[in-house]
Image (cartoon, rainbow over all chains, first blue to last red; front, top):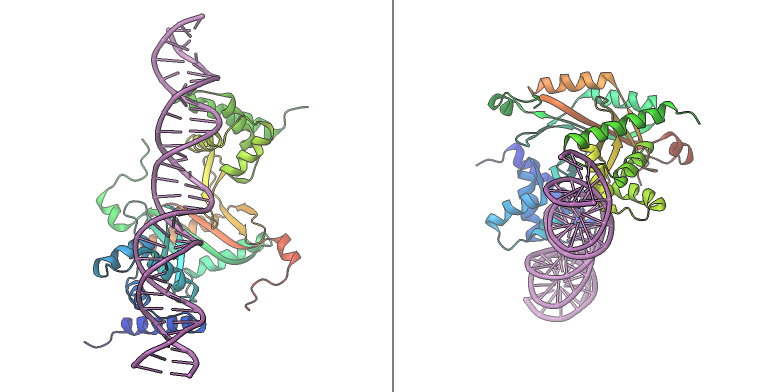
Length: 160
Length: 160
DNA sequence: AAGGAAATTGAAATTCATTTTCAATATCAT
DNA sequence: ATGATATTGAAAATGAATTTCAATTTCCTT
């Protein structure tokens, strides 16, 4: 099997992690390699617990703490970003430094969809400006029902 | 002293709380009255802990748990809204049912400023539409530096 | 390749905000 | 005033996030 664009990207990111580790006097370990690989190949927004469960299926010897710490490490190295949505759990998403984006979160199935919107970036600037506020970043989360969940049930928004 | 517009508004909200309690077969108590009054007169975004400390100065006999529970009650009655910003503490803001708004949060002093923006509401609709997503609500938080903090320090955004 | 300093690991313990429990007390409809 | 029911507050429980620590692994130096 030939290397896909995706696996090349993952390989590149793993190099980035190695550099980060070496620079900091940290060590590359079997566990970190497995966790990073699993994380980078899994495009969602996982909690430490979820990633631990996924990894634990194949690797009984890797503990939750190590998964947790490796996710923190990935965050520090710029390969992951921490996100907290309304359920208050810390999720980690694979992250390529300059791609700011926001999220659509389904209140029914919990699916998280990323979006980018240039108008939103512009609007942030304008709003901040109105308050003489100097914006560094923002967080926009739209909560509602995704296409699939909308198909299944047609009763959203009805008050009882 | 004559009643100001604000104290009339607070009085109205306290009536709303009383109705809510009566409807639910719940009771009006001295503690709930004090906590609601203190909360409604304090326009910020307080944590249960902060409000407890404020109240505890005057009322040593009111416990944290009661403050906490009363804030939950105020939330259920529609007089308060829970908000969680990036410090992961639950804050409560005084809330009048239909006023959706978003927040500017200062990374230096922690001040929280509310704003409303009609274009943002429209943009939410449009973005959601692009994903066939049915939006119910959203959360927009702009993190940066407020006017005051900008005056004091001029070194934001510099990478080291 | 072996030695050894330093980092890592994983289980268990800790932290800390939040939430629940429970016995004593207060409310309020009758 | 009575009594059924809700409330209170201290303390305990919860649960995610984080830290501790002894055993183990990594990897630099020789």
